[in-house]
Amino acid sequence: VIDSVTYYITDGANSLCNITASYSDQVIPVCGASYRIVRTWTILDWCQDINMTTNPIICKQIITYSDQTAPQLTLPPDFIASANQPGCRARPDLPAANVEDCSSWSVIITTPVGPIAGNGGQVPAPGLPIGDNNIIYKATDACGNSVADTLLVTVVDNVKPTAVCDLHTAVALDGQGYGFAYAETFDDGSTDNCCIEDFKVAKLTDACGNPDNLVYGDYIDFCCMEVGQTVMVSLRVYD
Image 1 (cartoon, one colour):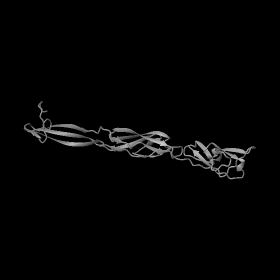
Image 2 (cartoon, rainbow, N blue to C red):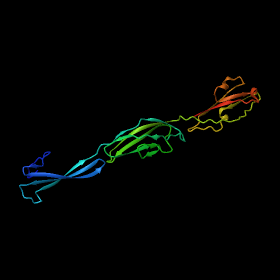
Image 3 (cartoon, rainbow, N blue to C red):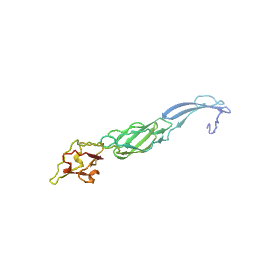
Image 4 (cartoon, one colour):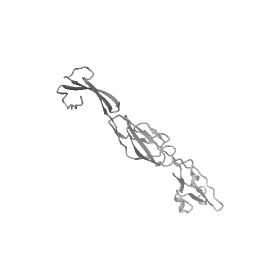
């Protein structure tokens, strides 16, 4: 607009009658892929005196290219982890998420036992407890746009206990020639990564005529027919 008259400058043209227009750009980085252009226009009327005050006319235009879109975040699928750590916990390696953005970006992962500063990595100590655990991935680009999503990690105890039984156990008989021993009697320090729930015991052979002794149960019977003999038993440990 010059003297209340609007002149339109079209692509490929830089003059109208005796009026010419040109510009120069200064590009200023802002953040990530964002930037600003300070465009300086110079408009000159060749029919007027050039005085560097009103002719040419110099004006500035600010053009902003702004990244206002959050990254695209795609998580790996939910998975199951084994509680193979002390305290019946799991420290699985969390896989990286797929992140797409026009700017640079970073990822932080929040777990129930602490954060992971990076796109994937091992769960911090002491590890995830038994059950369902929500793992939150958050991607943030250089312009502060962010997006978050949740991965489900289910921790299960699929580690068998380690059974340790007495090498020799003596069982006393009562006055009627009978005696019994509970399954715990034969334990000699069995362990489990979580906790031991129960013990069961069974004889490998039985001279007392009791078929229940050959089936795993809470206890087994002994009788005078076995006095002086070595009776082999089997101990089962349950978590």
